[in-house]
Image (cartoon, rainbow, N blue to C red; front, side, top):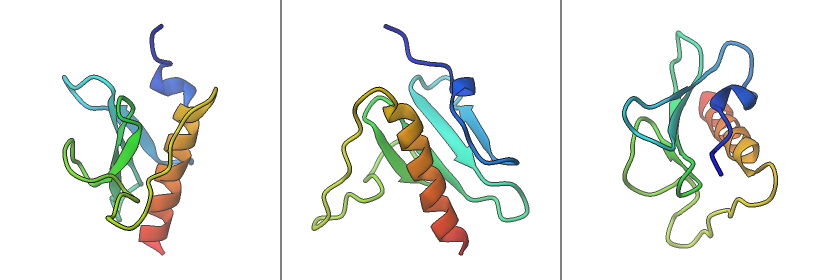
Length: 92
């Protein structure tokens, strides 16, 4: 079963969701300029990392906080939505 294309996932107007070059199952979610914030979405491990990063802890994976588990029919959109929420918090 192949993964759904990124074009099927919704992001806010002006934001971008693009695959990382030569890296399968990763995408970069970016806010519009001038405050160009981003998160890396790891669809394989089902997590979000702050900035442009393919290694390290996921958002919400601190030693005393359990990371959200993504599953079910729309887990990919839910992961993107959580990335959007994280970036909106960062912009506030």
